[in-house]
Image (cartoon, rainbow over all chains, first blue to last red; front, top):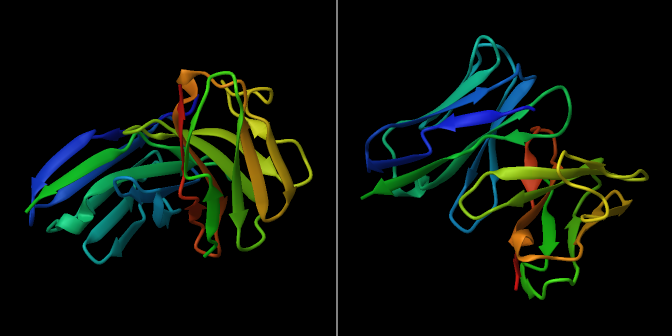
Length: 110
Length: 114
């Protein structure tokens, strides 16, 4: 079946350091979305990438969609304690249902 | 973007009983989705709920165990039937929200079966 894997599973960083999570799908995606889930909360939509090779930025966050539309990355520059949470990629395969990645839990130490 | 109210937020249930989870959306949405999330784990799609038709279940989930209703474009329920401790999890509903293509989630139902 369709699988979406993320690495690393966990990442602990010092505040101010950069962070990157990588997402890989076993099949080609029509688009990919990224979500953030704070501890005890529900997933919150961050962004959608559609085009091959697309790069989008939201302040300190940079999202990239691979040329083959099978992988994606999220990079956070100069992390802050407010960045703590689990980051999920979620892929769509020409349907409206999302297949969530395994997630990367980010911990930021002040 | 749409706002989803989900209830109950949490419940502790006896094995063998059933629990119905409700989600109310503040706007009309075509499709709603039900997920299960073990603490610290990813989200697993249970089923897609369309108004006016039977829900579409993912592999490993069946209608007898997780009956879903979708009586109109703003409401859906998921029932967890004949519960066992293995059903203990967080259940979330979701819907496509607005024009930014993002999905909005309810706040989740934390279910514990004893």
